[in-house]
Length: 302
Image (cartoon, rainbow, N blue to C red; front, side, top):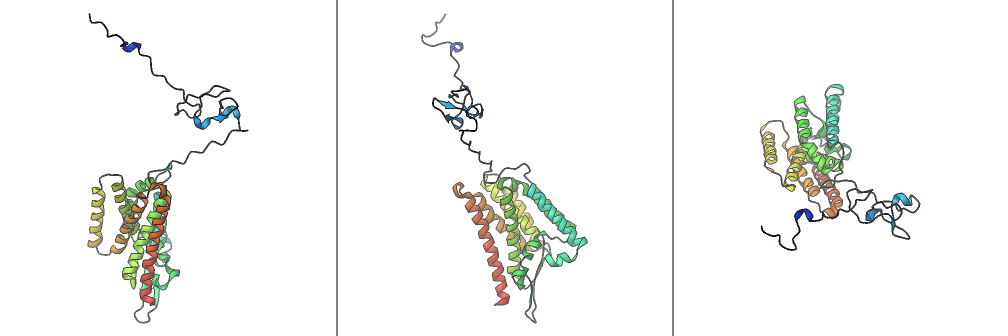
């Protein structure tokens, strides 16, 4: 028989590691301090100075107890607030597009002519119409993003938005996601006007949708997910854009570039100044949109 080595206790003789009690108000926190009045364990956040030791908020009541700091709202990696419905803005956008399509296509057909991205300069008189006429017609840059020509047109755009949009909405938050969508749509409209502002008729949410595509590629890159499928989707849609007659490539390219740039600003902003950088990115993109519109307008008024 081999004797146990001296000084080596048996496994069943080793005392268990002490387990600290947990704060009665914050069960996830261990603590070795208890309330000197009731004895319940309390963490540093719940400790209230007393003449002897510490008291808990329940014993002190509301008279001398300091307000417990409110926890910061839960946010995503890119600063968006977590919400119950991560696709609310996407649903609202789809609903707005559907309502406008029904109104302009069936109930109030003149609405399409009032809201489409139209710009025309008469070669005989030099009179400008639509966006080229000046700021009072610039609203068309926005309203055209919510107009569609045929059921297939709106169905394809809204399907793409429903497929790709909620992911971005959840990681960016509702406000940032909505800003990205609108900036991309505006950039697409502005590029259409800048390139061919003398005779333009264009409408559709494709610029905003391409912005969603571009920002999704940035998201996949930032989170180190395989970006190949998203790039393939973008390339496939660009091939369709340049090969099918009647599709306005300028809106698609403008929205795509704006989506990529806005996505980079939002997803690569330093944490210390994240909100400032993200807001600055949106303002900068709006400035680019304004510059394109002003440059396009100057060609007809200069």
